[in-house]
Structure formats: C-alpha cells, structure tokens
Length: 129
Ligand SMILES: Nc1ccn([C@H]2C[C@H](O)[C@@H](COP(=O)(O)OP(=O)(O)OP(=O)(O)O)O2)c(=O)n1
Image (cartoon, rainbow, N blue to C red; front, side):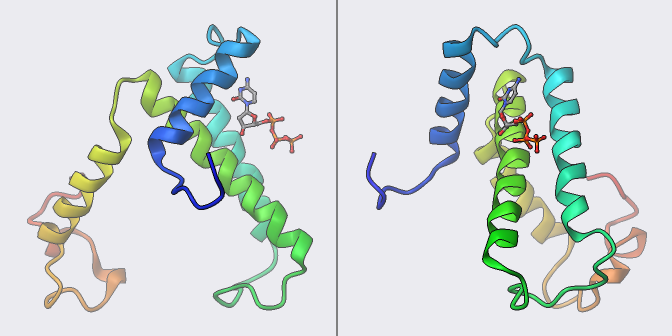
C-alpha cells in the first residue's frame, strides 16, 4: 500500500483483524470488550478537550504534539468502532451511508435551520431513528 492509496474502512477492518490474529487476541475482541475499550478511548479523547472551554475550529492555537495526540485518540475510537462493527457482522460503511440518507429525510434541508431544535417536532415524533 502506498501513501496515495485511499484509507478505506475495509482496509482498517483488515488491519485490525490481522493485528488481533497475529497476537492471538481474537478471544479478547468480543463485542462487549470492544465496546468498553471504545468507550474508554472516548474518555481519553474527551480528556484532551476537558477544561479548555470552547476551542476554535482548526485548533489554530494548539501545539503540533497536541494535534498528533488528538489524532491518536480519534484513531483509537475509530479503530475499535470498525473492529466492533466487524465482529458484530455489521457493514459499517453501508450502515453509515444508509444513516446519512435517513438523516436527510428526517431533517429536510430547507426546514432545519437550527440544529439545536432537532428533536421531536422535526422528526415525525420519532426520537430514535
Ligand atoms: N486488546 C487490544 C489492545 C489494544 N488494541 C489496539 C486498538 C487501539 O488502537 C489501541 C489501544 O491501545 P492501548 O490500550 O494501549 O491504548 P492507548 O494507545 O490509548 O494507550 P494509553 O491508554 O496508554 O494512552 O491498540 C487492540 O486492538 N486490542
């Protein structure tokens, strides 16, 4: 794989599968364990922003090493999510695309100007699509 090749969910899925196989860690990669590991990584991601207050988009004032750390924690969350989906037999790419389409139907572009009002009134009464 070269630097120019796109990084796909399938590639990440394969890498995580190889990683677990090579270490004989498949027995640890159960749905529940992976979910808990992912939530732990969401916690580590949250710590990066904790107590900072709101930060401007693009993080212009952050040091390079802080951005590298952020990339690592974002990646841990993504990798566990990809692995969890795989282990559960869910095609994450397809499921996410379908969800994007459902979101567009639930929140028509011309109607929804204020995202803070994305609750019952604009979702046909269904809060859990
Ligand atoms: N049983 C495991 C353990 C780790 N990993 C992979 C997925 C994550 O990308 C990363 C998580 O590793 P750590 O648990 O060491 O977490 P961190 O990298 O965040 O290190 P730390 O918690 O020390 O900051 O390694 C995995 O697939 N399965």
